[in-house]
Image (tube, rainbow, N blue to C red; front, side, top):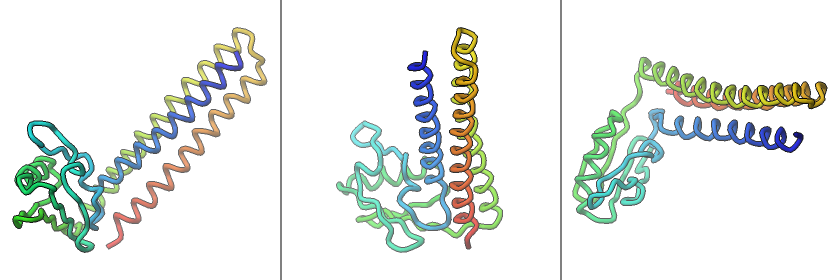
Amino acid sequence: MEETIVSLKQKTQEAIDKALDHLKQELMKIRTGKASPSILNGIQVDYYGNATPLSQVANIGTADSRTLSIQPWEKSMLAPIEQAIFQANLGLTPMNDGEFVRISIPPLTEERRIELVKQTKVYGEDAKVSMRAARHKLIDFVKKEVKDGYPEDAGKKDEETADKMVKAGYDQIDKILEAKEADIMKV
């Protein structure tokens, strides 16, 4: 009995960690008005008939605080890279100069900043829902074990532990969202 509750606690912690990692990945994709190569994460380029991550066919860097520079390893990849960026619908316009693909990051309007903050809060709530689901699974299992003879006071402690784990996860989410919101709203 004890072994399975311990392993379920570990799985709950892993679910909390996964939710936090996923949140961080999603927030990296939200642009804040500054050029960051992470904006292009997830873009797939047609590389000889295969969908390949952009980072595997080109060097991505920042020329300055508002310009991304993409240098493909093969010049024949310039057009497919440009096309993939358009298709990603990021609101960015790539410019091909024959050597590089450059992307100028326009400054964000106040309205767009508010939309992005709302979007980050949605991602944060999704992460919290995921954590609550993991907590529910653990608590339900503990309650079932208590009915089957597991000591009631130990069951209560396990429930409190689950609550503390999720509360710590919530606190981390709030800190992450607060930092991202400050970054987005900074002009």
